[in-house]
Every structure is written in C-alpha cells, then in structure tokens.
Length: 369
Image 1 (cartoon, rainbow, N blue to C red):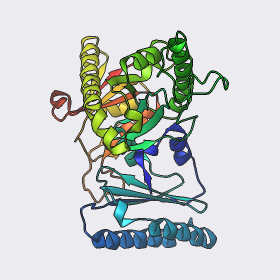
Image 2 (image 1 turned 180 degrees about the vertical axis):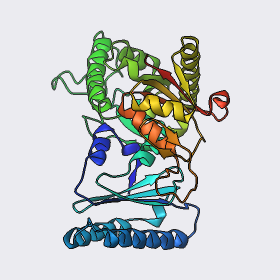
Image 3 (image 1 turned 45 degrees about the horizontal axis):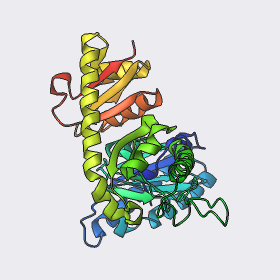
Image 4 (image 1 turned 180 degrees about the horizontal axis):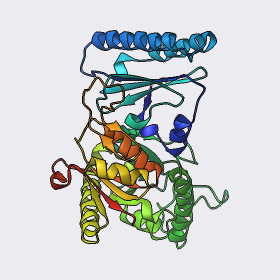
C-alpha cells in the first residue's frame, strides 16, 4: 500500500497514461479506528464483486482481458493491510499492473471502468496533505526527508544521507571530526560540503512539489541558502543543532510549528493575490464559472476551501446540476476534477480555511488574462 506523500509528477503521469481497456479504479471509504477491519473487509469484497460484475457484463471486455484484470483486482485486494488502513483506499488494476494507495481523506465509494485510472481523488488528497521536504544539515552527515501531513519518510537516494567526503588521509576535514578543532579552512570546507548537499537537494526536488524546510545551526542554514540552487523552494528555517540524530517521529514535532507557519503564510498570500485579481478584473468565482476557465487553461491560481465538496455533471464548458445522485454521469465531488485539471494546465492550487471564500461560492480563481 502506497502513501500519498510518495506521489510526484512522474508517478502521476504514469498513472494517468492510457491503458488497454479495461482499467479499473475502486474507491473505498475505510475506517482506521476499526479494531479488526471486519467492516472494511466486507465493503471491499462487495466492491470487488461489483467491479467483476461490471466487467463480465461489459461487451467491450473479452474473456482473456476479463480473466487478466480479475486476477489483478484480486491481487490488489489481497494486498490491503487492515493495520495500515487510513480514511480511504484506492485500488487500481488493469491487465498488466495494479496498485493500492492510502488516502488521508474519505472518498465516495465508487467503481470506475475506463482506459485510464481515476486519479483525481489521489491528487486532491495529496494536495490536502500539503507535501513538503525537510533538509537536516549536519557536518557529520545531512539527511533529507519527504513528508505529507503527519507522514514523514527519509529519502535514501540522490546521494542522501549526504556524508562529507575525506579530501585525503592527512587532512580529514570535513570528516567525522570536522569543525571540532579551529581551522582557518573550516568555513571554506563547510561551504564546499554544503554546495555538494545543495546539488543533491536540487536533484531530489525535481521529483516532487512542496517547500523544503531547512533544519540546522544558523551558520549552516545561512551558508546553504545564500547560494542555493533551490532558494525559491526554501520554506521555513528551524535553528536546531543535532537534528540529524532525531527519528522521523521526533522531527515531525520539531518542524510542526514551521509547517503551520508556512501554510498560514501561503494561504494569506493566496488570498492577497485573489484580492489583486479581483481589483484587476482577472478572477472567477463559483464552480461553474471556474470550470469553464479551467477548461480553457486560463486559471493561474485556484483557491479552494478545505471542506468544500459539490456534486455535478461535467460538460464541455459548463457544469450541470445533478437532478439525482443516482445519475451515472454525476461526479460526487467535482472539486477534485477541478483541482486535477487546473494542475494539468500549470495552475497553482491552494486550499484555504473554510468560510474564507464564502462570498465567492467556496472556490475562486485568479486568471492569467
């Protein structure tokens, strides 16, 4: 089972890629507080049965494809671990592959059969979790972590953990004892080492969105950020020595105030940009108006209230209100589709507190033109 914090543009592009029909997506609300997961297991079995019936009744699915996809669905369902259950689970299966993703928000129960996987709930969940990076600087070895919400996982690639290299056997700087003895070369060696760390960081940041919060001494942080290739991605700075020895759980507590501060500032900045857009007559409000602008690629910044959900039937340029929730064309949460489509056109998406957009229909956008 995969976590949303693993999602990056490359993985998302692969999930969105066309597949031989049928590609099956199963969305399932689950209950992490359930002591034995029995209710979720029953619901999953029922959803799997529904998916198989849909496939069996579909004239576009031949026998070979039916058998192959059913086998992948069974493999995906068997991999669901009740001990890892979150608020939602997404199972993806086609003839040649399958994946299971844990969702941090509750999705609608749904089976979708198409030639691509359903990814909008995954993308929306990922953004709700506000992905971020944490770079912990240390002259003994710097570490990089990737997080989303309260999940934090150490990155063990791109040269991380980044240990100082030993120039030669006579001069062990910047090795394990680097900085313990005064040296006229210490600052230059520190700069050299942090330049190397920064190069590794830049490669890692290419794989995913989100700010990088930097933890270390004031001198270490300033030295790295001053000439960083990724300066525009730097979020908050947390001055703390020895953080390279911390576990992920403890590090989460250390950076939580910084994350909360960054999120609040980003939300304020987005609302300020919306105000400027309104003043310049470059804004849209409400789901229907924004839907049209998103389809045309005009949205530069999309703001959505955290808890906003609405059902509708998507059409080429407008959203049609759902006459009945049983209508097969109804999307239970059109906001997820808005978010995913906006991201696909290069728009920035920011979730803001509930009621922040009350006068704009709970969702608003700054337009490019």
